[in-house]
Length: 396
Image (cartoon, rainbow, N blue to C red; front, side, top):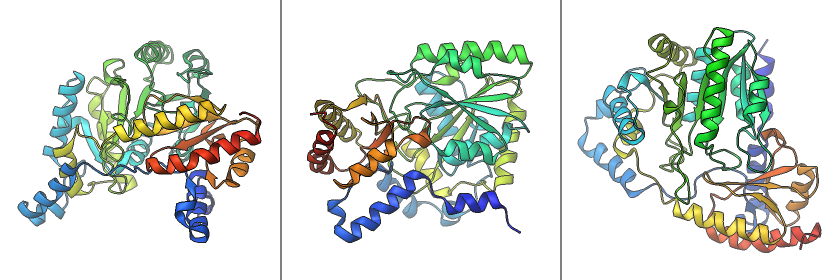
């Protein structure tokens, strides 16, 4: 016998991946240039030149055994120190190399963190809209994911609803800022409210309620927006980070977990992270890209292109009569559908070769996610299709 739940996960792709695969099939039929695919968050902006320059230099100047060999299970010590030095300087915190665990991307960071803290009957609260794989990650670690709707309109976290959802089984609150799928950045005021509630509820139930920040889009913000560092708000915090979006390296799978140095029982919690990485087989993240990340930390791909895409798309769709949540960061647009059934709306959009993602699995029926990490000319070619779709609903 095999694990039936694992088989079911393997047989059923996420809705994002289903549409992505449909796009490839449709492209083979009519030409990929004729498919207006806005399904997947694959960065369209190249990695900065410094990344390729660093790779070439490392290959030419670094001992091959070191470059392609095992590092420590939790990551190379010098790499982890580089993470700490950058974070301390940038965010005014005090971390050391021994608070970091290098991972194969943010997904691994989240799964390791959950595995390290989850006990039977534990619950993890997150705010809708949320990345659908959160449910897979949480349930795979034995926890129940409890979605709480964000505030209508702003999509800031609804801290009143969060407090009502907390109970003795609550192990963590999972936040994502900038958010996938909305691009909303949680404000410092929201984080202060979350932290105050978690402090009170941790005291009430006699155990820490952790705050987990999923931050692969941290540097992708616009109009002087800032992403507050949660370690400055709440001690019992984890940061799960990836270089996939900031450096346009999604295929290289490199990131880290940061365990707050002020966390209760910090050393025991960090040991649990190391143990979870061991159980899951997530030890020794790719050595070459650990070294690349250490040298390129703080740099970004040209995010001005994403800003241009955002402005073009938001301004145009709003003009056509669609109701959009203006994103502060990431590279997604969250749009309300003019009919209640978002899947039906997406099927109608296919008539115009527009591929959009219904947000039911993100916890928000009646919305779609539009990934604008595409070439600007694709958006320009798509605008007549969006306008035609709007006319179908009498919006313009």
